[in-house]
Amino acid sequence: MTHIGQYGGQYVPETLMPTLAEIDAAFRAALDDPALQAEYAALLRDYVGRETPLYEARRLSDALGGARIFLKREDLNHTGAHKVNNVLGQALLARRMGKTRLIAETGAGMHGVATATAAALLGLPCVVYMGAVDVARQAPNVARMHALGAEVVAVQSGSRTLKDAMNEAIRDWAASAETTFYVIGTVAGPAPYPEMVKAFQSVIGREARRQCLDKLGRLPNEVIACVGGGSNAMGLFAGFLDDPAVRLTGVEAAGEGLATGRHAASINAGAVGVLHGAKTRLLQTPEGQIREAYSVSAGLDYPGVGPEHCHLADLGRARYAVCDDRHAIHAFDALCRCEGIIPALESSHALAEAIRIAPTLPREAVLVVNLSGRGDKDMDNVAQWKAAHPDYRYDGPLSPDGGTPQGNQEARKVCAAVSEANGEAHSLPRTFASSRKNGRLQAAFARAKAQGRAARVLYMPCGFPTLDESEAVMEALIAGGADVLELGVPFSDPIADGPVIQAAGQKALAGGVDLPAILALAKRLRAKHPDTGLVLFSYFNPLLAYGPARLCADAAAAGIDGLLAVDVPHEEEAELRPLAEAA
Image (cartoon, rainbow, N blue to C red; front, side, top):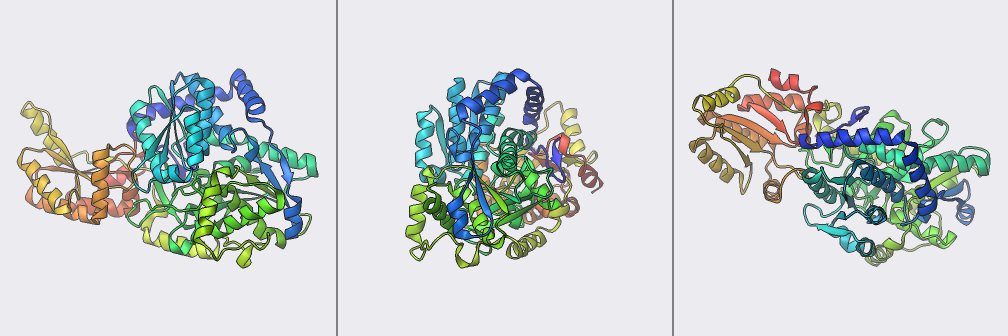
């Protein structure tokens, strides 16, 4: 299954499609392999230390009044978080496939530590990509990765956080997939990764469900987990998806507030788009460029989210609240003071939602919060945040200021504004990769063949160093004999470009270059050069944000002959090809 509802898919360069097919086949076979499943179960038991306890936070519950709060203690796993559940499964799969190298992306560092741990256990080299900002704010985990023998690459591009680390990891993978296994840390990315990560993390929900029945003789009223990419939440939700009476709640990072734009609430304030191989909800500009996400928690500042979370939100099966930095810090303090447990800042977002709603519920109500990781790594961040906010004071566990914002009215207003700005983004087909069957492109290749030479197809990034200068270069290329020009559309988060093209794209974006400007450039070229082939060369998301029908019409009017989307393989193109060819 590559899609779930309108989300998911495999939006990657064509060169990675055989690798994804290989991983999918190996994953299906592994699910039916009793020996591998037994080895995995033994590692979870004897190496990770599962099952993790379901702990009742009695002092916190009593102080709040209302519902009883239980904590699923994933912080007690070996390596200190839920990440190891998934990493061990993928590492065993990599060994089964004969891969000799592991790579990973990491934000807070816990997935990197878990991957480095699994690599050491299996005797494999490991490279972890981590944004330079996160390297600085998660120094203890960087030291742990080094101690485990991993190479940590500090990513300097973009916002220098988790999304940029994932971009670099995908580039590495595309160049080395024959020997390298990419261990994705969350339920995002191209299929089968979201399904695979969910399968390995579902142990959380299965245990929690059984533990509730054993301890309480009943299921909880609500289960709550933080959502960045969403793997710990999906792992918890998996145990209760078929229990309609159990409310599923994910909590996104509201950062400094949704209205400020400084947040990481992709479901509440994002629009449909494509990033890192999947269609999902994204924080993006109206032009389809990816916005920088922000959260005090390094593990939540990702501008996208797992496709299944989007689908559950659409169905109404799960609700997605938000929690800002201040309330996350408050929840962190509350658990420390009331229970003697130091939670990760990621987990503190989920805990804040439980603190907000518990007093509104009767005592017999039961809330299960996934404590996804421990907070040792966050002590410096908490101290720095408090130093920067001298007005903050912990006055007890009750939620300050009337509770955390839920992501309902405020978030829906922001989301509606983003949706309106992005036009057709909510109703887009999943595919885009097409060129005309007839016309200038075919004529250009025919001329080259008749002359006994290869066709001269040349790529030029639009807007580098400026739009006018790139247009002058294109004129020179045509004068020099170019048969076809590929007009490079800049994108904030390329996954297949080298550093030179990536830097050119960043400069173009900084100069305000967008699709309308590029189409105007194409129209000028077409007026002067009626026989030269012109192709728009782009990543998928800017094309989606522009709107497929509008894009095809405007591109045809500008004299564009073909559309080439780097991250749209043949398998994802069928729904849009008729639109492009008809234009």
